[in-house]
Amino acid sequence: MKTKNICFLVPLVLLLAIFICACGREGSGSSDSTLSVYRPVKAEYRTGGELIRAEKVSLGENADPVQGAAYAISALSADDKLDSVLPDGVEIVSAEQNGKIAKVTMNAAYRAVGGMEKTLVDYCIALTMCSIPKIDYVSIYVGSDLIESRLTAGDAVMKNTVVSSDEAGVRVYFPRLTGGLGYEYRTITVSGDSMPERLIMDELMAGPKSEQLSEALPKSTVPLSVYANGGICSISFAEGFLSDEALTDEDIQLSIYSIVNSLTGLADVDSVQILVEGREVSDIGGFDLSEPLSRKAGMSGFAVVE
Image (tube, one colour):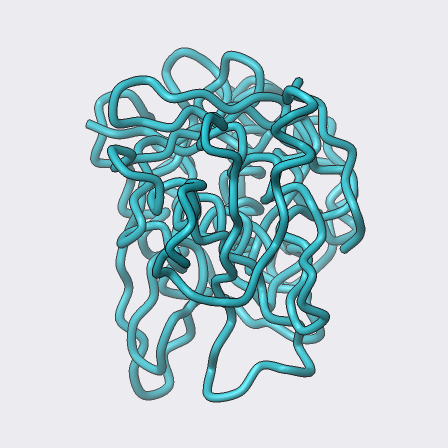
């Protein structure tokens, strides 16, 4: 990750006042306001499972803490063991406080971030913003679209990846009744020979809980096998997969990306190969499925909270 362009406007006095200090959460006794900025630990320095570490940022006495936090998140760390929060091309467009909520607006590149990388981005933003007094939640937008709703310091962590040997929090995607995709959070239990990929497909086949969402796949759909290797998750369906004449091309697209987005939420899955009876399929509803599919910008979905 590298230094990012910062698109929101921050007063010059604020930019000059911000500097990165030693790690810690307690104040230094200065009259300046401080907050903890959370950043990913570089892979070579991760010990004992530590993925994220806080470092202290000092702001000018009259600095806006939410804008200051957004600036600090976008900047590089002074600690060479810590990585940049934002992936290449991803930028914070604006950040503002609305009651107890910090509203953070990202650029369109945020939609394409997935897997462990997105988990770390969301976690760092949520923890940093929630370290500000009177901020209890963080909502992340792209333009006017709500992507992450009311994240907290407690529940932002690992929402879309396996977090232990026996439990995972995952996003499961479904078509929205108003168009596009939405997702629900589900908890799966991984034990014995069970695979998280298979468990996610079970959740997908079970259908959504929210009335704002519709089923991703027809009830007649039969998954035959699911396995992952080298970053590719291959899933084979029985003959007749998405062949119902009542399905439009848009229906098929949403079904396919419900599968792709749900499975690529796992940290070790980068793309999904969809097969029918173990064979590659050149065309379903105008889609070439002969190659693995990755997340597609604009198909990342929206959080659905009842």
